[in-house]
Image (cartoon, rainbow, N blue to C red; front, side, top):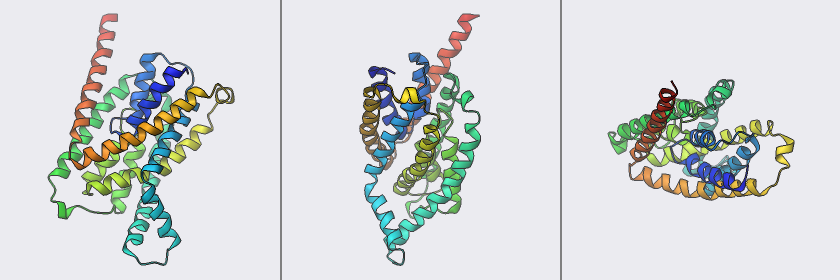
Length: 276
């Protein structure tokens, strides 16, 4: 992993982790076409630390209120009650995430090989974003829920677990799932990323167990650059996504996913045909 690769992949991870266009799909596709063959487990751990840190910083107010709602557990203040309900929804949503993620991790060697699968899943992500935006736009605002219920949490958590498949956007599927379930845009956005935190921590723990000591002791500059660029671009991406969601323009990312996924599938099909 050289400096150029670390910068490119760090920036890509920061933007695509939170913009609804699939970070894993982009990383698999880029690594495939850049010809990166060496293990990137430790690098992936480092850039995920960077994106996790960006979520913590971006949602620092909500996290502070969550902690405060636990500390002041006896308080019946409406705001504290709301955040205690959010904690419960995050815990419930984490269960199907862990289950579906565990099942799919058993075939990760298949999932993370080549560019065809992530390209196809980008088409699915585009459709799911379009569906969430379409259904949400047709709902009357007063009917939209301002906190996720048990079924909402289970459905959104399951979709977060499915997003281990490269090409399926975690942020895209969780936010769209919230919109499909009738959540308001602000709470769908907030819940998606609060649900991301325990999932990201769990993934980091699992990935850290696979880190090769020799790789981890390699020159630190590429890893530092990858982590810091992932953090900075993560903050930018979260800001962009919130703005796009508020303006009801998620379909912009649908078109991106459809064009990129379709182009890669066409390119790969042409390669096969010309080799015959």
